[in-house]
Image 1 (tube, rainbow, N blue to C red):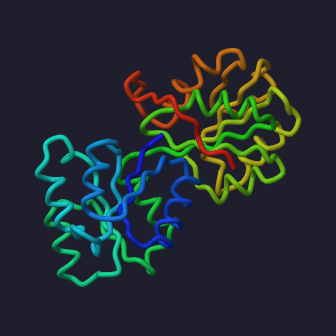
Image 2 (image 1 turned 120 degrees about the horizontal axis):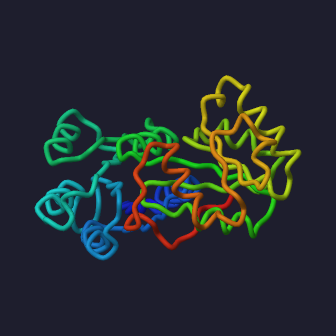
Length: 250
């Protein structure tokens, strides 16, 4: 899963953003001052940094300068998040190499997550299964530095989760609840907001789900699910991008 380093000294804001990012499928590491932010960037090598400006010890601009001057860290996309949002602040952030500037209070959490996803090319998957063991197998198989995976085990809430979650792909596990999954597939493919979403069905009976875009046998989840998902969302498969971590479970 993509790894975000959140550098924010306000505990309340830190908790809100951490919870949202984790719910979206990110791994989150937090730092409470500028020096700690640089240290964690060196230790964790995150995929994204979300950086406040007004920080103890080193402010966000100084942190950004040092990140950009470090050949090992300069490639990491940095998104600024601050109450300071004057034209001068915004210009300074971009001139130092920030990817985007978010103003606290006016930039919604969902917008922040969506912009990070779009700017960094992350793809979000929602996997729907009725079984906790299947959830573990599916989420483990989908570990990849460009994939955000959220698992929904409450079938009654599945359609709402997809509509509100704005994923790039849906995985439906039909191995344990075929009839329910068939109905979900029909809903996904006939609802205007979701009908263009690619859908993978985990099943031994693909002929029952002709409207799906891909199929993976339950016994082949570990071998085939990630490559099938990456192909459908337009990402290259690579061993280096796979990670041995678990996705968020909703």
